[in-house]
Image (spheres, rainbow, N blue to C red):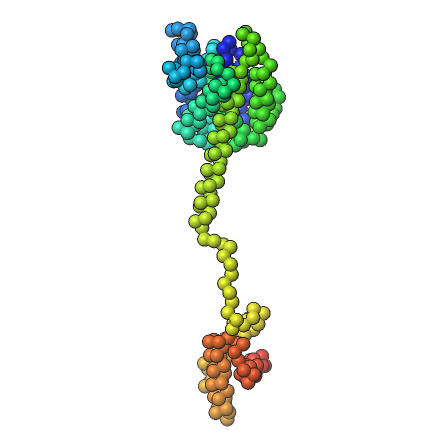
Length: 311
């Protein structure tokens, strides 16, 4: 995009070697380039005033409100078209692949409208060209793949984030320093910043929305940080739990086979011991080991010694 008279187009970098998207698989990029090329074709073959009809001029508002959308598809000349479309050709396919064709088309228009807003804030001149929209696409690429390497002027290797930051600074400095034919500052370059600003706001909002969706999904999952349930006081301590469990299990096994394990000469006494042990074990199951009396603990300890001795 430029303010008339047209300025020299910004240099377009070479494509990122890591990009998996292509122009042939990017319908939105193809359509945008095709529309812009068709407008220039009409300009060259039908009427030379086509760009002026489509250009945005804030002084013609609200009568020519539609120009806020049409200006980004018109260009001053063929070289202006080639510079902008080359940038879209390089950066657009991969961004479209990430966004989807329809979303990418709306994003492109949004960045172009950002250029209109900045033009109305800083100057009320005439805008023509897709530079604001293309700069927005470049920023979206830099936010998502900042470490991709491209070649400025096909020679100087730069990371995408460094290249985009350099172009932003270049547009600010050149826009302030350049003087037009009427002696005023060429603020068409600030419209480029408007496209970048619109893209930045959009990307921040999109990333925040994505994080919110992740948070909502996480909140629907079971809470893994629930506080531990209180342990009843009557349960045995952790360090003695394994030993008591072994004693209880082995004692129950012996009690179940007491008729076979007890010898006839001691039958009555063994039966009494077995009944006492069963009572102690039932009491442990119901009230915990801390509820045992000293006599009951002796019964349990005696059975434990017998088990250890193989009795």
